[in-house]
Image (cartoon, rainbow, N blue to C red):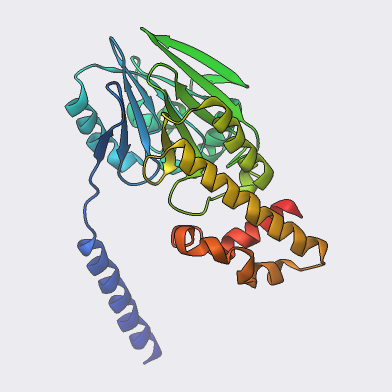
Length: 298
């Protein structure tokens, strides 16, 4: 009788799962024109940057592998030119998941040194468990890496890529298009929610805030910002966001100095209360943010 009940329950769970899957709306890739040459693509995962150069396209991040064909078709509506460079801002799968689908003899993958190492580590686990084969594994890996800074020239455009240390991860890089005055910040900026600071992958609160300071020195009031997640943004909005992070940081430090435990900080709503309405409804809850700040700053 118990086994029959378990089987019936299993059928109900599976039916509910497939019902929910059937109700899921298909992902739509949406393009937003930021300048004459630069677009932001949104879909499922990290925001994609597209620069259309004189002869080819420079692409930043590629979301998940199951979206690659849709992304390619969307890019074709912007320009018939071929993609020549795919740049990974960091290692997470919602920014690098399509690497193998884009990695051809005509497209070169670029990332910061640590980003490649972490993409390699993650995919090596999949290779060893036979989820992927060796060909797919190698195509996932960036072919050119850099430590601190990298400059590329595409016609009249100068593309500056620079590493920001221990921010969202230990392998984050921002990309700035000097002539178009557009900055892609990757996941060092979540314009509409609290940030995900991946402490297990080398991220830190201080590094995250320092990344914002570095960006603010570079840009001006006319700069268009592509965040890792959220709507396109401006210098003024980034300044407001950074001040919010610094305020929460100071509140957490005060709690730490007073002897508060992780659990006490996590449940203390006063620490981030004034910002929770605007930023606390996303992927990172106020509780999780406070716990991350405590763990990083402690």
